[in-house]
Length: 76
Image: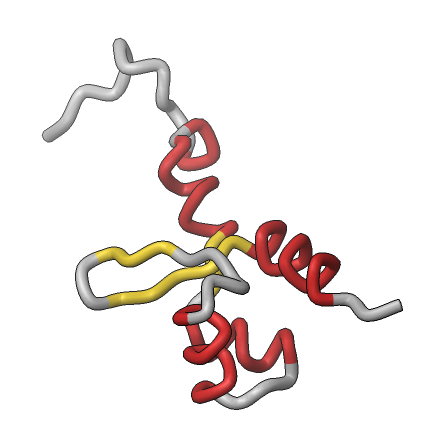
C-alpha cells in the first residue's frame, strides 16, 4: 500500500502529469479537430508547421500549439 499522506498529492488533479496528459491530443483527435486527413496532418508535421510530441511511438499534439500553428498558416 502506498502512503500518500506526505506527498502532497491527495487527489489526481494535484498531479501535474494528469493535467499535461489531458491537454494532449492523439493524431486521430487532432485530425478530427482540424478536419483533415491523417496524411495531411503528417505532411504538416514533417514540414514543421505543427509542433508535436513523440512519446515512444505515439505522436501527441498540444491543442494550444495546434491553434497557434493554425493562426500562423492563416492567409489574409
